[in-house]
Image (cartoon, rainbow, N blue to C red; front, side, top):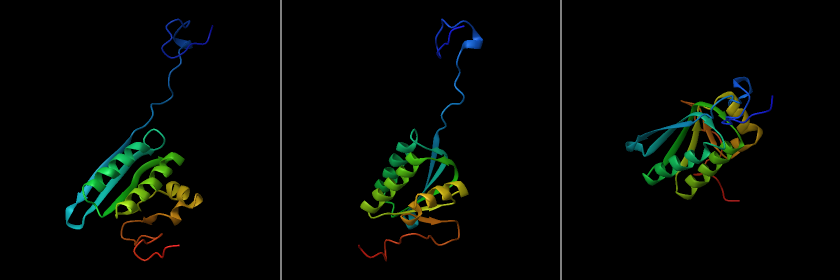
Length: 145
């Protein structure tokens, strides 16, 4: 038997055909805008990684364009985030700061919160759970360095 490739019709038989282990998951972003307080909540669900990170940037720019003064990333349904996803969140924070908008993360699962802590990104981001005041840098009172 010789090795086959996906889609290679010349492989010896079905037992030789390679099949993908899993399809890459998608990132689902649901936007909830509350006009009365100019807050937009983006609920992230699925996986935030190299394949899906650009979608976060696009959704964030849409929210900024719509006049949001505060953007909340609800991470309660986010199952996975790698370094590309973390980079996308940090870029989101920079984009918000440039546009005079605050970015806040809520409901991070323990493994996502651990990623933020290990990389010390938690020191740059505002993290909070529902009913909890955000902790992390407060841009309204931070002194320039």
